[in-house]
Each structure stands twice: as structure tokens, then as C-alpha cells.
Amino acid sequence: MCSSSCGKCFNPGSRPGVLCNQTSTSGYLCQDEAFACMDWSFGSTAMRSAEDEFEEDVYFGVGSFGSDDQMSGLGSCFRLRVAGIEKDLIVQAINTGSDVQGNQFDLQVGDGGFGANNRCVGVGLGAASKGNTFMFPGSSAVWGEMYGGVTSRDQCAGLPEYPTDSAAMKASGDSLVALCEYSFDKKVRLDANTSPSSNPTILDLARVKCPDALVELTQIQRNDDPATFSGPSLPGFPNNGTAVAQCQHNSWDLSYCLTRMMDCAKPSGSWTTNVKESLVIGGKKVVQFCTADGYTRVDVQCGCFDCNC
Image (cartoon, rainbow, N blue to C red; front, side, top):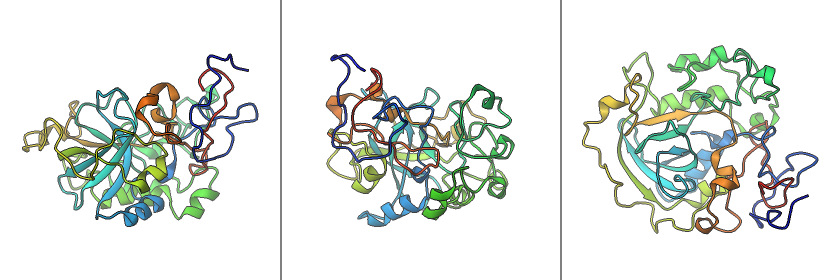
């Protein structure tokens, strides 16, 4: 159904998955049935297992980084030293956003804020009337702020534990409530009951090699990765502490801040139009996203229903 100029196989050899729908053999264009994977969330069972496999004692995560490289940072990994967090974080950029500023990292956590691209919960937002589908049941009222989610750990208990299609998350050992609580416990977000700031300050940041166990979760890998898991600080780092005030909850300048999100939507790195083929490894060219259960991976190998393939 495609012309010879666009009906190509973009990502042959990638990890198989389910078909997006009955009319497409690929997930590249898939949108209505396309969601973020919940095991990408900070502290998920899969993420903690990946950390255990790694040679250093760090936290793993994914999200968005304010970068101006050729792919807006997609697929790149960064090592962060963050005020108040006991371990370094190694995180991979799989998403982009115009609201993510330079030297800011937006980490996917349990209810980190459903944002402008919300596919988490529809009731109360008016979006359900547009025919959109959402991952979780219930009302948006318990999800807290659009950007940032709930503001205290005790509010996590009001969230739905599982997606509407709950079997996969139950089987994984995860729950949205537990993921939300874990993000407060590890201080990647700060509790409004005990801190005037919700966003921790990034003290140092460097681009590093992506750990294999983290790539296994996302299925995107750059071919220009650094050689090691530590590296020189990016421009503006180490942060000398003057940027701490910028990370206050009401600040519009979030550079040097570790912020958070969880919009449940297919990430930018899953669209082939956001990927430069010359910068990614064969079979790991695009982020492999999930169905509405948040765990079942969609096929992103090759074939297409129209020209975004």
C-alpha cells in the first residue's frame, strides 16, 4: 500500500512484538493503540532488576533531556549527580518536549504529571469525548497537577493501582501507587509537606555510554555513545549551587532541575521521523512502546500502512 519511495523496512531485526492493529504490520504509525511502557518508570521491578545487573550502584531511568543535538538527545544516556539523592542516576532520553529546558532532565516516575500529551486518564479532562483511549480508569482529580502529579507521598494512595487492562502490571509486581511512593522515598521528587521545593537540583551531568540493561528496556541505541559510564561534565556543570533557587516549584526556569512526568503516551523516540538513521544501531533504531496495558510491546520492525514507515 506504499509507493516504492516510502514502503521500506526501517528497523529490521528489532525485538518482535504484537501488531498494532489488524491493518498494519508495524508500530511506526500506530497512535490510537500506542502508549508508554510503565516498566520504564523509575523504581519499576524491571528497572530495579536492570540496576542489579549493572556493574555500579546507581539508579536507572528514562525521560526527556533539553538537548540541541541532531536527534534532540533521543537515545543518549546521561549520568546525573543530584542534590539529596544517595546514588548517581544513569538515564536515557527517549522523549522530547518544548517545555524541557537545557540542562534539565524530565524523569518518568509514577504519576509524575500527565502533561499536554495525556494518555493516562480521561475522565474530568474532556478528552474522552474526542474518542481517545486512556491507560488508567477513574478521574484525573486524584492525579494532582497536570505538570508534576501529586505533591506529597500521602496522595499516592488515592491513585488507581493498575491500568484498566491490569493483568500485565499485576504480574510484573508493580503498581502505580507503589511507583509513586518510591519516587518520593528515593527523593527524585520532593514532598510538599517537608520541602519548599518539588524539584531536586542537578549538581553534575555528563553524557555516558548507555548500559545494555537499560537499552534492553527501551530498544533504542545510539552509535555515537561515549566509551565509558562516566565522562566529562556537560557545559554549565558541575553546578556551583547558584541554580538551586531555580528548582523551586513555582519557577518557570527549570534548567539544572530534575523534573518529572508520566503522560502514558507513545514517546518521541518511537516515531521514525524523529530518528536520524545514521546515528542509531541496526535493530535498535526506535523506542519500542507498549499497548494500553503498559507492558506488552508493539512490533516496530518493518512494514507499514502508509508512508510513516
